[in-house]
Image (cartoon, rainbow, N blue to C red; front, side, top):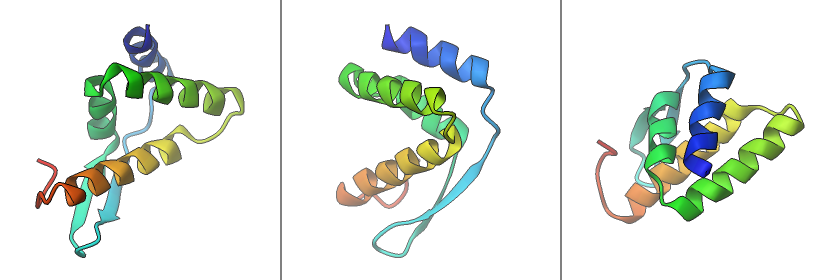
Length: 90
């Protein structure tokens, strides 16, 4: 259900394309756009998709910024890759 909800959510919301500039702990700057984050969400494990779906529902209900949440998720992606010792996300 989460995959269907997520697909429908992002289609209906038509999130504005945004480029995030995120610096990791090594001082390397990563440029990650909303499309990349949304794709990462679709490819995430089901349990992570469920948590993200619940958060999106709450943010939508309270009319909060989805883009800021996507920025937060982009920061987590950079942190994960940084911890894994990778130089870039791609």
